[in-house]
Every structure is written in C-alpha cells, then in structure tokens.
Length: 532
Image (cartoon, rainbow, N blue to C red):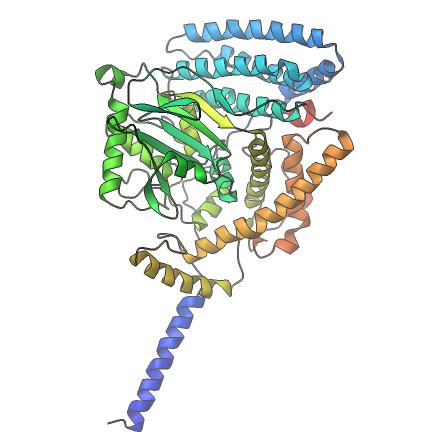
C-alpha cells in the first residue's frame, strides 16, 4: 500500500541516489603525489666552449671558398676515421678520450655541411659509421650512466646535428629510406618499401600527435621515437604481421599497410646484432620470439599498460611487446632503462596514470648495443613537423618544471565521467570505447587539453614566427630559435590557454626565471652555428 510515509521515503531515497551520483561526478580527482625517491637527473650537454668554437667555424666556412671547406672536411674525416679505428680496437676498457674527440669531430662535420650543403653526404656517411662503431663498442663496455651518456652524445647528438644541417640545405636533399647497416639474418623475410624486413625485426616510429612528442621527449634522455612494434613473417606464406600495443585497443595484430596508415613521421628498423650469442645457438631465435608473441596475442586480449609497469607481463605498453618477446628466448633488451625524473614531467605523467618512472622508453632501444639499426624512413615535411613538435614539447616541459600543469574546466569532469561510463559499456559490447579502457576520465581531459587546445595554439604561433624568421633572414629558423618561439608563446598566451595550461596553486613565475638551456633539449649550439 502506497502510504504517504512510503512515498516520502521513496522520494528521499531517489534524491539521495541522485545526490550521490552528482557528488561522484563532480568530486575532483585526487592530485598525484610524486614518489619521494625520484631524484632529478636529466641529461645535459654542458659543451659551451665547444659550441663557441663551432659558431666561429661556421661563420668562417660560410665566407670561405668551397674548396677550403672541402679540405677541412677531408682533414676532419681523416682524423675521425683514425679515432673510429682506435675505438674499434678497444676491448672492455671505455676509450673516454676517443669518445670525447669523436663527439667534437662529428659536430664540426655537421657545422661544415650546414655552411656548405654539398659536403652533407660525406658528413652523414661518417656519422653512420661513428654510430655503428660506438654501439659495437658499447656491447662490451660496462652498462653504467657515464657510458650511456657517451653513447647518447654520439648517436642522438649526431642525428640532431646532421638533421639541422639537412634543414638548412638549399635545395633540400632528397630524403626517404636510408640504409644504415648490412645485417645478416636467416629468419623468414619480405621486402617492404625497398628494404628486406625479417621476422623478429623491431620497428621504432614517431607519431604525429602531441602525445607522441611527449613520449619521445619526456624522459631523461630525450629521443626521436614514440612507439615500438615487433614484426613476424610467416615462414610458409611469407605474410607479415606487425604486433603492437595501442592505447585505444591494447595489443593488436596489424598488416604492414595498417601499421603505416597512422601518421609516422619516421620509422627505424632494428635487428638483433648478428654476433649475439643467442644466434650462435639458434639462428631462428628472433623468429621464435615473434612467434611466441603472435600466438599469445592471437589467443587472448592483452590490455594496454597505462602505469607502464614493464615487469608485469599481463598488460603491455608498446615497448613491452618487444621486451617480453625477446625475454622469452633469453635476450634482455633495453640494457639501460631511462628514468623520467624531472619534477614537472613526473607530475604530468603521474596525472596521466603513469606509476613506473624507470621504464622501457621506446627511444632507448636505439641505444641498446644488442641491436643494430638497419634502415630509416623519413622525409623532409615529416622532419620539419617533428622539429616544431619537439621544440613545443621541450618548452612545455620547461614550463611544467616551473609549475604549469595541464588542466580543464571543473564542469567538464562530470561529463567526462559519464562518457567513461558509456565507454565501459562500449568495451563490454565489443566496440572501441570513447575513452580507452584503463584511462581515467581526468586523464582523458588532460590529454584532450594538450592535443586539442595547448599544442595547436602553440604550433600556430611557432609556425607564424618561423615563417617570419625565414622571410626576414632568408633561411630556416634553427632548432634553438623554435624553442625560443615556443617559450615566448607559452608566456604570451598563458591567459588564453587557461585552464588547459595553468600554473599550479602556489607556483609563481617571472620571465627572469627561465633557464638558459631547457632540460633535455639537444642544445648543440645550433642557435649560434646556424644563426646566420
């Protein structure tokens, strides 16, 4: 019987349920508290005097006759070749003096080729050989931080310096696929865009989204890649499958065509070093690693690992696909694992769900001496986009260290939580969820702030200033200038970007507090050596 008391009780209960739901929707998420044991240790170049020398050499090379620059390049290359021979001759002892000399030589060669683009092919060829020699030596050197820094200086430093020279070259050199090394393998294979790809090969790539720039630049050793994948080639049919873990779907099996459909600014093909002991025992070991991962992903769904807990084999982020596949055959890749230790970066990544801050960063695989870089695909427009995205992200991570955070209006959180609830239903029904499984509503809003508001606004400003720079000076703005443009844009548009980018409560900032060199930026002195 519906008595007044029962009707009142029912209404109060309904009101209470609605009130509880409303509270759950609007209640702010708990802010992330960084682990107390993270000690900031970002890599820094600290080569001021070298960069001053490079600036002087660049100016001299610009005004000299081409024959003079050619003679200097030949002299430097000859000295560099002798250095490489001495590096190759060392055993387990790290040749510190030779590595320091090699670093200076490669920067000087890049400087010359920036001033005289006809010298660029010779400089690029030498740097490819330098990369191979140093990574070969690192396969027997102690796996310690100083060694890691030296390898990074040669591999990443050489890449950054020559790419700056490429940008300045007129007319731009034809880019595309670059063969880096001849690496033998007996596993099943097929040809992809002119390159022989083997089962067990690894792919590093750089996506075009702002989040890709965050992944590539957001660690103590900023790199060029944001995604990792594993190749399997069927020994009977010759069919290739790319095994990769995607935020939206977890670990999936793709064809090479599907893999390349998403934006790839560059792709690097890696292969297990042919003299690795595991290959002496079983030449097909990389194929068996890929086969194991193919079978596992085909038999069960493997979700995406947002916390980046790489030792847990239940869910994978992209690097874990390769790591756990090769671990199954006794090969432990990622010889040195990067940390993500800058305070602002830790706070940003923590707000996005990351809980492991020493992990398997995709770019780090490039420096692992157990693998060899076989080929790389990149073109001129992609290289230019990557430079702008890198500059913006480097400036944003500077801002993060000063107290800026990614945010959103308070009223968007209840809506996002409702969308998250709907996403859970989508996933249960087999559809792609609007908010990926494992991603919180607040994380989705922060990602949206970066992708939809902050990065596009800064990109437009940087591009405008870069175009003005080129019109006024007749050449492209060097990387360091792009970083300066992004810094200025953050300061000038802070009010417009709020609350997508806002100062954390209690933080304060004045322009005078800007550091002279952003943590992690490849500060090769190119603002001077290319700043005509």
